Image (tube, rainbow, N blue to C red; front, side, top):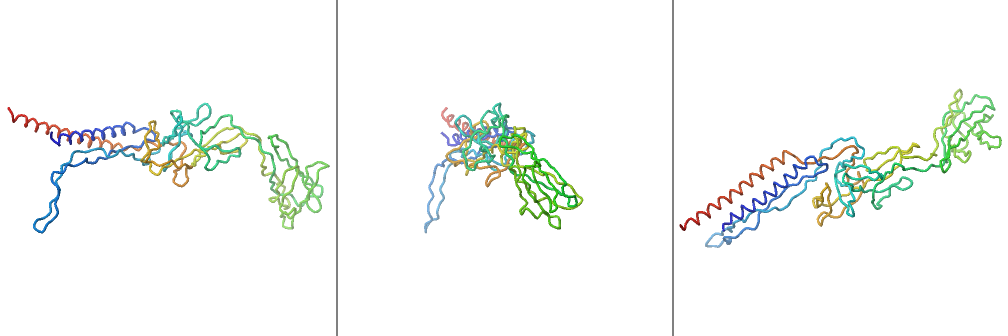
Length: 392
């Protein structure tokens, strides 16, 4: 049989594969996080018709004569170029700007994806559109994200609460009037909390003396702590500006003693009552920040990211996910924005990176290549027909 017949068949098969890959790219032009693929061809073995010879004194060298035996698919490579951003305004929609993949748990298998269309299920777990669990690290009781800890499911139950915090320090500021008569009393109240969040009022009473002011809790039995100011109206005693009243350390460093001005006030205190989750946001490093009813903002979890030495070696697992292969290397875990990892954009999705103009051009190239190889088979058939017609 003619070698060209089999070369044409190999060309049909290879260009059919190119049509399949191109058609899949076009079909996924609107698939979130999809990465297009491209076919690479290479020739097959060549049959040696005549070996080459070396140059001699009496005769020149000759080149080898070979006949190729067709074409084959060398590789189908994935293009991991960044796709365009589409604004959705949904807080759980995340786009990776740069390198990296999300980790998702599907059954017992960990897969990787660029599709950040996430949502919370009825149990407060962050999941993908097909129900796989998004992986990350959960914060401890103090809102700290463990570094290098094991990854697991991310949960944000609506009944999430944080405990109250006992008041240990408070800051006062403003001015105590220097010209008032001895015995003048100014009172201020500080809202303080105990360890379980019970709210009480701490009275801070300033009583004018000949030397300065006495600070007490306003009761007859309460201890009085004197404070004084220098000639310029700045606090001179106690040194450091700290006193303790009712078990709370008061910071008076911002209090002054000028004349004709009464602005003494409580600036802040560090206690808090218990709080319930009222809202959440996802920051650029993947941290899920919860806002609580007591005004506190605390880290709840951080979405994990993965990179690979050779992303092109990942195996497509369906559902816009990938799994590791022998040539991808092991996943290197980290956080968004870290070295080698892209940042996250909340409220955006990464669209497919399919270039339709290129894909339609590839369709034309594949179609013409298929037609040309079909013509090879037709021509070879006509030659064989002529051979059979030699015997009539």
